[in-house]
Length: 154
Image (cartoon, rainbow, N blue to C red; front, side, top):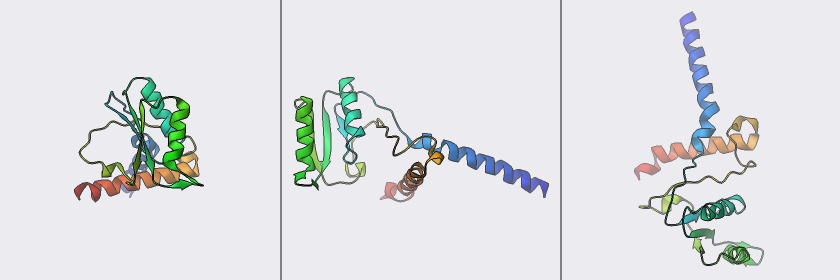
């Protein structure tokens, strides 16, 4: 009986250690020199700023802003993105690309590196300290598991 309790305690400590470090595993931040920087559509505050930072640091000579085909009031996201680029004064090095895909999976056969754009409202390494971070951690692990078990083999 004591042996089972010890094994259970060791397993519980192991699982807790895995859970505590699971946020670090999910955050990938490995930028390297590239032909182009691609800023994925979706969040428009931190991602474009991170892309511009990488462009300024010389990771690539060009930046592409992916923009979904949707409207915000009377303007399309592409029109808003164009106004943003023009205000930056970097129209020669930034291109706007309209997309309808929802995942990098829809861009097969391309090699890319990843640079994280940090947003403290969305996620942090100590995910258990905030309800929203815990939900993001859970759903990202669910997506990773789905990819490994189902999507990878399609």
